[in-house]
Length: 160
Image (cartoon, rainbow, N blue to C red):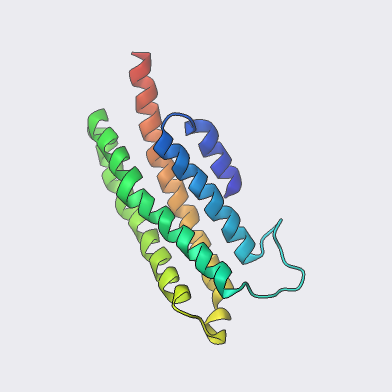
């Protein structure tokens, strides 16, 4: 996921401050996710579960990221797609509902892990982090398709 993020930053970075900040927030979210999940290079030799504070911090980042997408970035992208024509708008109308599915998964994860967790709930963390990771990877791919459409039309307009 971090490699795909680097591609996104290289492709669209610098074109828009809001998108730049959003991609930076994605980077921070992914790093925290890898730390929480114990993925390389953050794997834990002792196999210990993360602290409740680490989980809450991750959940805060997660909610901030999905909220920024829905309440800031997607509106801007949808407006740009609308200006770019029917084909762009149709793509946005197709992708945004698909992205919303991962929002529900993220919010469910947040609800489960920020209201005080017991040992039984913590034992489900690895599996649920894996499911969340899959949903977020799909979300990032959909978001990147939106950004690619926006960028390609912006580039075409500049070339005209």
